[in-house]
Image (cartoon, rainbow, N blue to C red):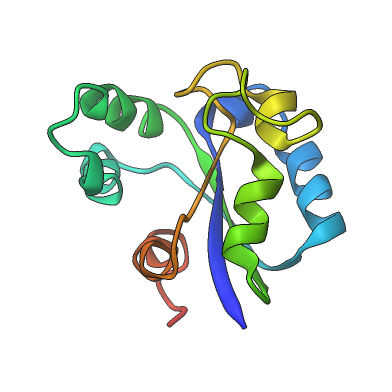
Length: 134
């Protein structure tokens, strides 16, 4: 059984899409935790450390710490791969019709959600929103 993290990003929170996104996810996945949090700039820098040095890094840090986001802890068999397919391509214009990013994203940065891309990423990212979960 895998666990993964979905983050409803500040753009989607600002647009009042939390309920719609959680409802879509809940139809297909087992949600085991939900937590709203505003990442500090330092937390966002650490969370996205794999992108440090890339041209979009500082803008991403600024965006992710600009307002509240919602961490959704999801559990299931092969859930990382299944969730990533469910949310769609990073670029909403390339995301399959009906995926979260297709429906609610506007650009690569403002694409409504983030999802862990591997077990290693999930084990690192989950504690940012759920520190008491191992």
